[in-house]
Image (cartoon, rainbow, N blue to C red):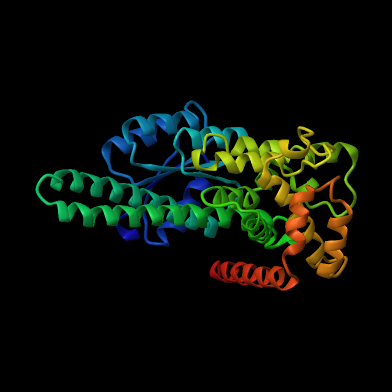
Length: 367
């Protein structure tokens, strides 16, 4: 329950400290504040905190140093980092060192509450899993039947963790789409489209899930692209286009070190490659491009053409089919195009309807 959760808020800005403390206390959490790293460590030694919310940019001991100290002495304490600028490299470093997530200032209190809830849920599940394992080890010699039952509980817990990871990835993809009002639901649609084609090509689990995740997160690197470029209504300048083309590599770096996304990150890096080698960032050609990226390339065009935009209505599926067929062998893998053309329009339309129902349901849950 929130009223039994202690949260320590660390920031050298008293306005931020008070704002977070007031907002989280209103949700039932018990909050204490500290103005710097040294004070926060004293409070951690004196009390028990399930979660620390810390600024990264602080004098003397910065947030990354504080994170390392906390993880040495309080490994079960979850940590959320705050930063005043979108510093992708620092954020990645923090998460590699054990931070659950990071938020950029100015932040939305609703977003803070959601992140806090997820961090605490992750902590709870990990502690439950640890306790289950201890219980199993204690009973294994005397109660085989109990061991079997507990193993089922662990499997269920693992499924819940997998489900939680999947929900987090889909929420992240939806959040990225909302940075561009023209592409709401795009990531979830192309991920589902990619799986539909890959399955018809004979791809099975676990590769099918890896491909889904890669397509879902294909634009994660746009976190590092300024809004002034990403949301620019006019044509990009050559300099701006150079920056925009960096997003596959930025996404690849963001996902580095996340073991269950190793295959997906290769798709993220390669999703702008083309079959004839004219794509970027590496200019890969033909079968050197990962299969998931080759499939994504086709269905990304399908989604772009068959989705409404402020400046035009969605094109019919037949027009998208013709365009994709026209570029088979140059932009697109002919083998992928062949399978793509076998899927009827009704199946694409049903996937589109299902995904958009989910997107709208997620959007309503935010309010």
